[in-house]
Length: 134
Image 1 (tube, rainbow, N blue to C red):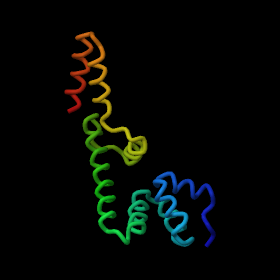
Image 2 (cartoon, one colour):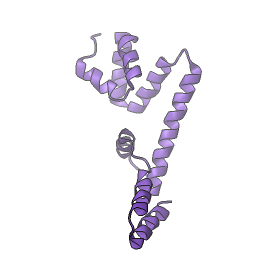
Image 3 (cartoon, rainbow, N blue to C red):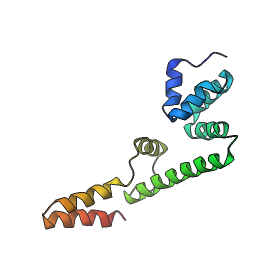
Image 4 (cartoon, one colour):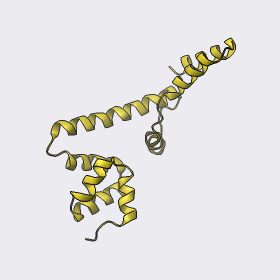
């Protein structure tokens, strides 16, 4: 099998941390890289699970922590969409929000704006938005 080309390597590296990317490039053989790349093209979630299993096969405690973190992040995304009134978001929407790390920061923004402004009406409006999203 041929080595991954630069663009293929960059696609895979976009979803990995720097340490994981280094492991992918330096420690895995060409066949495994190609198999993981094809899996990445098919399903990114399966790719991450398979890659983490390879990366942390010597350290099962670290693997459990990474899997727990991934599950917690997915739960946070689901709860965020529920607060916004979106009960069944598509996979594309979930992926877009997880890549941008946009969680429930709107509440923090509204709360900060309510504290900064001296207008009581605006403070009440920001407080109303905060309560409605809970």
